[in-house]
Length: 173
Image (cartoon, rainbow, N blue to C red; front, side, top):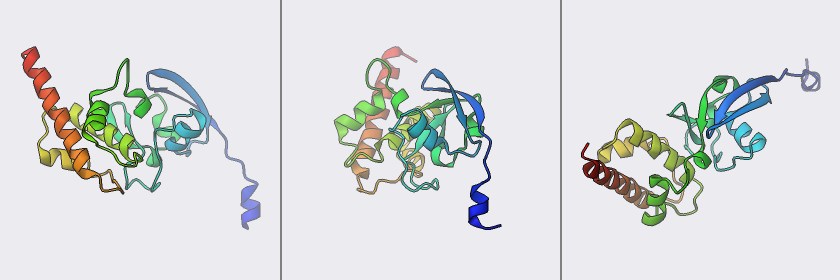
């Protein structure tokens, strides 16, 4: 069979249900469609960036049921029935603490990696409320900044830690 013959095969689409940023969604897609493509093309959620496409840069970081994942390595069938949070879903009424820290500490340069970095930090601070500097570095290890803006990114992460510590002390917990 040559390439032209292979092109004639149609792949059956399936319906997948998922919650994206708190909204129930139903998408018809080929089971092996990349989640990053569905988010960007079908749902117009372009904050999830695609850079390497092979799970090495973290630009496409999202949360699936609260756990960090690469949208470029996640297939449609894997998220059926699950909850997905993209950078667009992080902000509720006002900016999230991670978004504010990035803005105020200069945690971005070109901004391409920023959504993935913020999502990765959200996941880290949910898992480890008071991470050490080493925890932060490890938590961000799957995210690359091609502009080498790591100084601002670390300042942002440290600010988040400081503010969460302050909130915890005020609440007495």
